[in-house]
Amino acid sequence: MKARNLVLLAIAVLMMLVWTFPVLWGLATSLKTEKDVLAYPPSVIFEPTLRNYADVFRGSQSIVPNLISSVIVSGLTTLLTMIFAIPAAYALSRLDLPFKRGAGFYVLATQMLPPVGLVIPYFLILRRIGWTDTYQGLVLVYLTFALPFAIWLLVSYFEEIPREMEEAALLDRAGRWRALWHVILPQARGGIAVTVIFVFLNSWNEFLFAVVLGGNNVRPVTVAMFNFISLEQTQWARLAAAAMAGMAPVIILGLIAQKHIVKGLTVGAVKGGGRR
Image 1 (tube, rainbow, N blue to C red):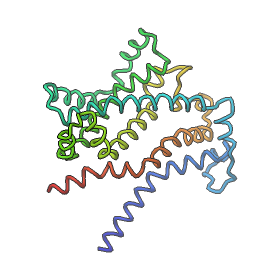
Image 2: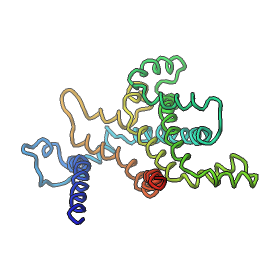
Image 3: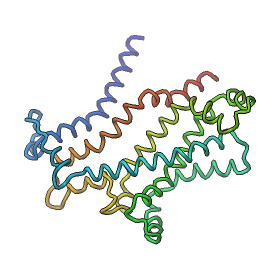
Image 4: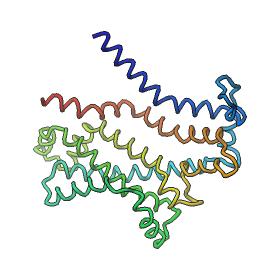
């Protein structure tokens, strides 16, 4: 048993190192000068500097406006997605609707569409209505992908909640909306937290639609990183600093909601094991 635990621990540590090594390497690169970054062989011991972060946040290549754009787009996308996804998922998981099977198939089918095939149609539509390089245009496009994904994910969590709890509330004349608010949502906090994280993360990391449908007014941080890449030179140190700054909000959000995320990711497995 101890040998098995040691093997599992070694595998877990190895997987953690595989995941953290690029992050640690990027962090180290962001603290180097361009001379140290290009040194060969790579310098392990160097004098750290915060000059790259100063240039990224206060210099002529500041990404602060781009971080604000990413926060606005990702925040609005997440908020609107949850507003529409929670009632829709509740209806698909609890109500006997005539179009329930068709709606479920549509939600699943939208996850299979290749985004690259929709770039040009979205661009033509947004240009026709004057919504290119606007927050509402980019949020609308992100909603078309985030909403089906959130509904599909939330339905699985809502179906795990015992119907007896909701039926007791309905017998007390609570109504569907009150039952959803006071019974379903408190029980599905973990699943909702997981959905919020994934929707925000996908919106924050999106690049293809941001670079095509954005512009000078709306330019998320994923697109702004290309400011440090040119035909003559790639500013690796500043690029690494910008990458660290772009990762920070997502990491902070994950740490804040860590408890609910773990609970949400394990609830299905625990209940599924109990039914065997």
